[in-house]
Image (cartoon, rainbow, N blue to C red; front, top):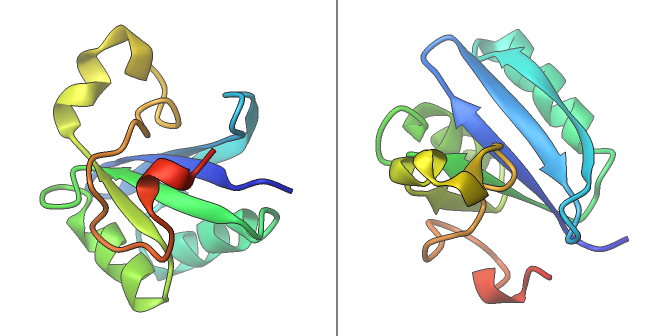
Length: 113
């Protein structure tokens, strides 16, 4: 199985994720509360795809609390600029994963495909 990108649109109390394959097929997703229980359910869902990278909108802002949790749990996280959500190519959280240089990752972001 190839690497999937889990695009996240974070908010203060809930976040929406969309899991996308390299060919931009949506494989799954959902909306999760950002408290501990919701975070655990979200991460458990993501385990279905062993090769995954989290692309979070605004890691330096509203997405910072979730990015910090994922990084602390040794997850690969990319920062997606918040302005990308307004571009037509970035209409979905997963498509917003046209990454900027990674905040933390074990693989170079340009080798995701």
